[in-house]
Length: 600
Image 1 (cartoon, one colour):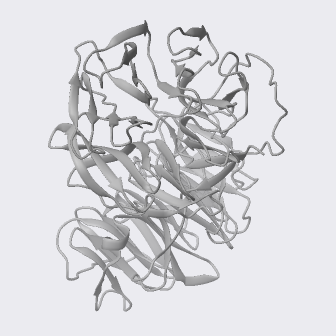
Image 2 (cartoon, rainbow, N blue to C red):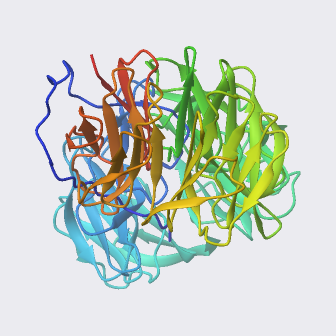
Image 3 (tube, rainbow, N blue to C red):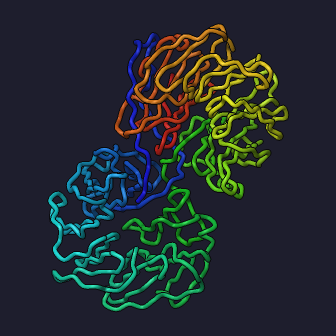
């Protein structure tokens, strides 16, 4: 089962806004496309359910633009699979489960995924839904049946631990360890060891991770194992709507146009990584739509791929330099041109030989030159890979490596080659006087996890889970300013005496760089990020844990003394950025990509 933390934003309005509201109050998902998931098609529409997702994405124009649906109902309900009604494009079903709770549900939407209602609640998670004149849902208890998509009953004699479902005309195939068929009102065992089922006409193909691919040319009555120029475990296997068989193993990706008689190797695995799902639009079966690790792609030859979606990444960090906007995600960083009018961004998927590779921090060293902190593992050790781009985020090289995990990088405004790198999971932070090429640890036993560093003309502020600290000698000595969990620190670039600090639910503000005043309980959820515009207006965001709608951003027009609700995207927010020209506010969300709002 897939797990993902669900999100909720609920912020208290502390004071009414002083400035006039911006002319545009809507938040817009602008990408980056970089997440795959389970696919569902209905006419020219495609739906995508990201792994363990709590909402679906929908495109009505074959992936040029994506719309994010509303959160699923229920407490922590996540999706296993998505299926669209081929006759009604606005009707879509999700097979769901409750993380950690064992229960499940079938969700149904009749408005294109904008809202869902539960039409079946089950004791265990629902693994899949198949929709036709009669619809079916699979679970631990067996297979449920519905004639109207609303009322469901468990089918007597259906196989337990049912997972993948597939309709071939009126025949139903069920993967439940072995493959079962339901035809003519009777259940029968069709063959053994099936996890994934696909078909074209009377041709049915099954895939099993260890036992490989099997083929039936007579609608599942007889079966033969599929052989090819590969060995090892079968990662993916299917037949497309155009009749092409595709198999992916640890050896690579292979296609056959003659039902397995001959095979040719493609470079799809190098281009796409591991396949998750494969389909096509009903009116264009030769255009294959592939969901893989880094997004959703289209191809006609498994050689040339065009990424079309989806904008559901976790964006941990944001930066802007010149006309370039950069977003750090769980896989790498994406780059686009400000103000971000297209959902498909450029992506650098290269990574050092390690596991993890989350981009936890970004900072501009000088115009066009950007640093990013990649959090990964080498062996069993948490490592920070500090990387540099000299082309505004398009390509990167590793310049140093140290222990820990970073969530913040800050550049000294007076001495730009001096760089501070916050470190989590170790009791230190790092200082560099050569732009990050060499990093010197500043070890202090009282540090428990540095979440934020913010440099100014006279030194650096360090936000730790144990409190706020100040150093005027590059971190050699530290003075504790006050206790508390500190999530973010911001120094006003116009006046470094103005410092804003975020705790879990409170903020602290200083106008003299010495004394701080707390504004308590400005948020009901954990505050995560703070940004400032050229006009001095402040924005603070919260990361949330439930996944229902609510205001996500707070705004202060008086330097942080009071805050008011500014709306926000329907996800938890990990990063905020105001564009250099002050026209746009960008929010990096959890499982929703980057959202923007016009400020003027």
